[in-house]
Amino acid sequence: MNIIQIGANVGNDDLSRIIGDKQPNNLILVEPMSLHNDSLMTHYGWVNNLYIDNVVIDVKSGEDIEFYYHLDDGPLYEVSSLSKEHIYVKHNKLNVDRISSLKLKTITINDLFVKYNLINIDILFIDAEGSDDDIIRSIDFLKFNIENIYFENLHLKNVDIYDFLKNKGYTVTEKFGTYGWTSVAKKNIKKINKIIFDSTYSTSSLCELGLKYHTDKSPISSYELRHSYTMLYDFIFGKIKYDNIKIGEIGIWKNASLKCFREYFPNAEIYGFEFILTLIDEAKKDNLEKTYYYYLDEAIPETIQKSFQESGGNFDIIIEDGSHFFEHQINVILNIIPYLKPGGVLIIEDIFKSINESDFEEKITPISKYFHSISFVETNHNLQYTGGWDNDKLLVLYRNNLSL
Image (cartoon, rainbow, N blue to C red; front, side, top):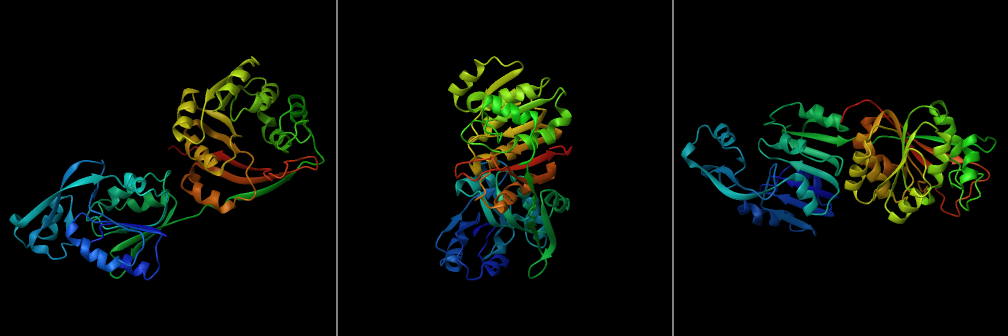
């Protein structure tokens, strides 16, 4: 397990009881007050990968900031905060002149995750004395996968944080722990539908075009590898075949499928996205009407965003037929949503059947609310042949009208 605690104090708390004697993969304890380091080492010294970081979680990284505490609150100094007013409220019977501060460096929660090279976090435990909901709202939920979030509920600025987390795909328990001062948000896993589509006894004009242009999307193609996607695509897209639609495909190998789509969709604008520049240069020589090409590297999310933004977005159909690496397919799903129009469809091609479907479910759960339908589709045809790749499988996602 990867565990992060914001506001660790001396370590004797609900988190320590949750951990018990289980050895975490990584335990990162963020505690601004370094005087607690010895206590934390005493309490968690048995953890192999233990990191104690004396910083403050805030909205910007690398800033020098005042961190307040009351001199008469020792030795635990449980009430310490970025807010001096918070110290007033908690110690209203003590001398306000005894409030002191430390000068500390700040780091954002997202930069903290990056610092420790964590994308998947099993437990994020926050006790930040009034800053808990600010920290939660600042998390990049599209980039980081957090299974369980524990946070103190005594000093929430706005109880809307519960609805915020529910909208992010979490189930929330508002009262948890020894005194009920902790709330828990547990990530829901989106279960994806599964469809088997057998086109063995079917054919279509798109299948014939696949033969004509040697694309591997057609089971009757002369290409050495043959998937059985064209009958399914004709079944899905036949009703918009003659509409003025916008189609994008990531991965343009020899321009075959774009030539196929160019003839099948006579009124469409077609956009090809590719990271091998020589393939783009060769494709342009085909001089296809209303067909445009952009550089895109699926390994770099920024290039996905940049290329689709430059192409104008608002796509009706986007097909991912790139590297077929799981991580790259996830990058596309997570970054393509703003460029897909309501009712538009994103199709991830050539998913290896060896990859657990639960891996996809876990990764896309945070953004599943932006799609009204998500389905795996396994395609079968007696002429399909993938040479042992065993990746005749699609993920089909239909965009809803929910704004980002």
